Image (cartoon, rainbow, N blue to C red; front, side):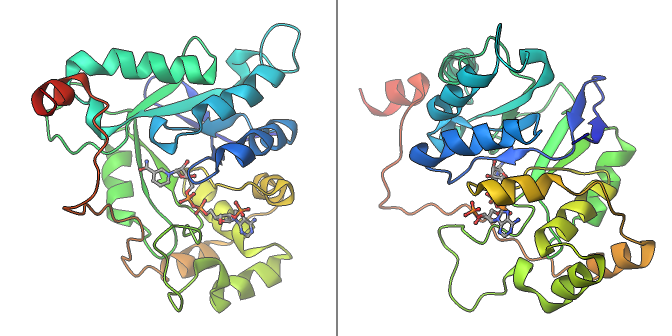
Length: 267
Ligand code: NAP
């Protein structure tokens, strides 16, 4: 299966569809990554906070490198710096830990997972990874980023039905009858229509799945095109509804992986 790409301001080409790995538990993520690579995915979205990079690395070691089916340069690997490691003293060690866990010598993209520290940025971001799906279409942000040469990557592109805090009765994007009707007209699944919508908007998207048949179908979005009317129709489903809302409980245990925080709080 050939792949479409978004060109980043650095000149790098990022495959439009990648495999998401949040919530893919260690026992499942290795086979999900193997299924993805074997089906033509060349972009894997990882993060230290997903606590499964070592297992992603096990899959990479089986398929990538000298004498294996893929060269490292054929893959686009993203990882992310967790919120407890923002201090400049902690960044390199955190990045090296991810490299070791993934078993690679470099990353193609290293994102600040949640840039909560509000530092002033001296370097323009290359990719802005944000929640985006038909219920949160992000049109203004998309235009803003496009005007400034910043690529947008959609996380939770399918509406994250397995997010841990989903409540019964909440609207399920892939179950929306309007999306299902469009999917029926094209002979595709709801997920494929949504992924195609992202790709046609020029957005990178990283649907997560641990199910081989879904991993395969999520990449099969290049053999059809949504009409302009259908693109606009899907955009009209926007409800400005954010599903991924980080919450902090006063009583929760906070992992102090940062050396700076450890020094500050554990002395
Ligand atoms: P998502 O990709 O929108 O949805 C994943 C869910 O959809 C899983 O329950 C999966 O089920 C199901 N699914 C996948 N393909 C399907 C298909 N073809 N038909 C029916 N169901 C399908 O949700 P997400 O995991 O929240 O977001 C994707 C990725 O974005 C994450 O895994 C992570 O890599 C990234 N992310 C980044 C951030 C950030 O802060 N930067 C935040 C959230 C997410 P199965 O797995 O059971 O097949």
